[in-house]
Image 1 (cartoon, rainbow, N blue to C red):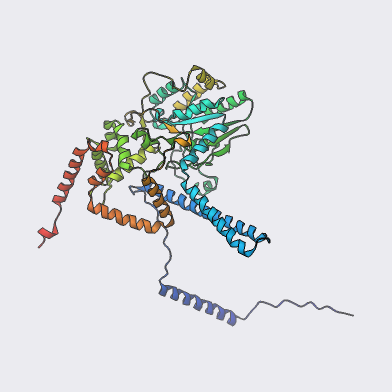
Image 2 (cartoon, rainbow, N blue to C red; image 1 turned 90 degrees about the vertical axis):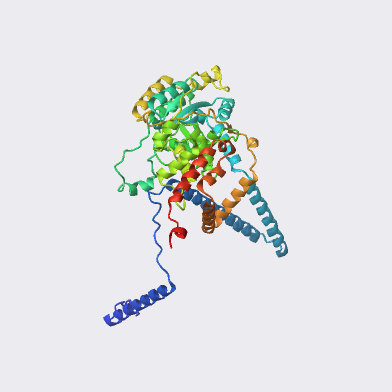
Length: 550
């Protein structure tokens, strides 16, 4: 007979003497590591405190950081795709047994040449052409097109070239959406509504700005401040208009959202969906490709990149509607063009600065008022111009334009087209919803808002052949931006040193004078002399150690 004896597992218990000895050895080892780290000089990394709220250029700095982050992410994604392609090609070559080792090198060389050619083609391709392609796709695939207008300047947000392309597409409906209507006085908003609805169906809207991603809602709820919620207004009117047209159409519809940069296209989609699906932000041109968002089973909405502004427009239109950031376009030139179209008396009251004769004098007083100074205490004119421009293109400054005194239809519209555009919509219900929306919106007073003279319709570019070729200066600037992405820290230090040298050699008035275009230089000679006299007076009062001190 066989007997099986079960062996017990060895116990992990040990004597106290042995356990204490092990713990002592561990403590000694950790102490030794800390001493070595202290000798080497390794310290804990300090947490980034971020930009304080009192910083004068907080918005501009955050915008720069966003752009830099996006560039780095794009570079990382491109490098990742390149690595994946290389690995796939190596696998294909490895699986082919018929390829001789001598031929492998030739194949690799050919692949490298093809890759270099593709990179050169992608580098030469203008991103504006891609925007044109995406915009054409949105117009072709959509049954209803929503043209989003900034209620502060509705006429300046309309693009005749795009509207003409929609009309030529056939069986497409065009609706105007007056967004940012809370930044305009109610009387002015009603006047614009009466003017625009004669031509096309118009919806008064105010997109919500406090939408957050679902993942962040749980974390933010505890720290939420008891401020007034900026809810969406006009959503019901737009929903009912689209649902009514879908019922008359008899099948599912696709709604395309188009408009110039920074008018609130993505914000309207997020408000309709009640979720932050599309990327939104302060900077212009965040949306770079079409994005399909299903609202329900019958309605699908499509986001699109902004229109490309034609360089033949006025300086004011280029400054307000261009997707380029403040760093690309000269800020003093753009801000001066905007300031020339605004009421000077209301600008003085809004920014609490003394009366000014020209834009350079205004920027000097605004820099002194907001505490924008360079090294040595001189006013930062360019920083004040950036501040004015960022506030004017943002969604916080209240200004308004008067509609034309006499109504005249656009050249690409006639009575037949206008009746076709209004067919299928319940216009009576739309008027009631617009009246209810205007009552719900708390707009600013006429005294607290700035009167602005619109430059009229803004011409855009749809065809890729009409896009102007880049100047050599712009190409150099883009190459420098690419180099900045590769080595940001070193280039930032060099740029700071260069700006310090320039600021020490030149006064702020001379720097602003170089930035201004020729048409502004003739009018602003008196301002230059005024600023220089003011600076010299301040410098005369300063204490000079070389002469006074003995």
